Structure formats: structure tokens, C-alpha cells
Length: 244
Ligand code: 16G
Image (tube, rainbow, N blue to C red):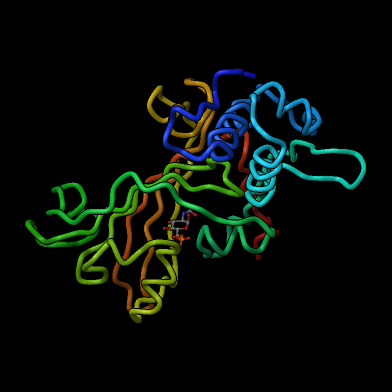
């Protein structure tokens, strides 16, 4: 614990500063999974704040799913969500998380429109100079970073990327463009320094690089996605059948 982490000299409310500090310790692994947190009164003393502030900070981390409060026993760090994703069904990240009782979130890194690069135009079957929406975000499960996702969608399907705040697929479906089929390639990789920083983990840690091309029922390609999933947080599961 850094006793100086919470200070009334900063603009952010004290409980948010405390929550931020604890969140970093939990996600960074400094407080281990399933460890008990010190009692409210000890935390209050350590950070020179009131117990009300401690309680609010713990409550907000509990709401994010990072902590669990057990009656009579104290506050514990939740086990990190490790997500199992069936490979053969086409779902969105939001749906994947919801089906596991986790809350999906995004930290936006980029949400802009631009001209397709020649590489993107070739893959998406666009004319040179056609516009695309670019969505670059960190995907979170219960506040824990899982993946960095770079989606490129032709502007004719999504003219305003700003319209996406939660689920991209929900916005596409609402516009009548239903993701119907996808081709995906998974390859092993390790995180660069920048990627590791965004995913709150160590540079060089293992990750899965996934390229997905998603098609509409009419056969047109609606998105090109390149993402990096944390190797320690995501499992892909596939069912195999004896070929006929
Ligand atoms: C998944 C897809 C991604 C898609 C996103 C939409 C993989 C590897 N990727 O993360 O292609 O853009 O879902 O999720 O499965 P959203 O509707 O929650 O934005």
C-alpha cells in the first residue's frame, strides 16, 4: 500500500482515489487472488481517510466484481475471471461476458473514420479511397482488461463510430446489418510493451492474436478485426467430431 495514494489535494473524490489505488494493486497482482483485504478500520488509518470513504471505495470495487464482501468474514479479492469461449459460435464480446454473468466494458483508444488503407481495402473488398470506421478499444470483463480489439467497419455499414458506446454488434444489428458468419485465425504471440501496459500485464506475456472477418447474410464483409487476447485470461474451446 502507498500511504500517499489518497490526498485531498487532488480533485478526484477520496473514495475514487482509494478505489483506483486498490484496483491497481489487485489487477497488478500485488494483492493476490482470494486474499482478504485489511479491515475497514485499518485501511482508514493507513490512508488517513474516514471509514465511510473506505466503505464507498470497497463498494465500488465490489460492484465492478473485483472484490467480494463476505458477511462476517471480511472483504476478499475475487478470483480473476478466466473466460472460456466456444470457438464455433458467432457471438459478440458483450454476449460472451453476459452469458458468464460478467459485465463487459470497453476503454476506448480510438473511434474515428478515415480512408481505408490499401491493405484494408483489399481485405474488405472496398474501392481505394472508401471510408471506414475504426474502433480500437480495450475489452474488459468485470473491469479486468481481457483483450485489445481493433475493428474496421466500412462506413456504409457504420457511418458514425461514435454511435457505438457498448456493443458494436448491437449497433450493427439495429441498423439491419446482422453479423452472420465469421472466419477467424488464431496465432500465438507475446505482448509488446505497449500492449502489456494497456492490458495491465507484463511485456512478453503470452497472448492470442486473433484476426476475424465477419460477413453479412448477403456475403458482404462487415468487419475486419485484429485483436490480442491475454493468454492468462482467455481459453478458446472447440468441440471436435469424427468427420463423416
Ligand atoms: C468479439 C469479436 C469481435 C467483435 C466483437 C463485438 C472475437 C475474437 N472478436 O470480441 O470481432 O467485433 O465481439 O463485440 O471474438 P461487441 O458487440 O460487444 O462490441
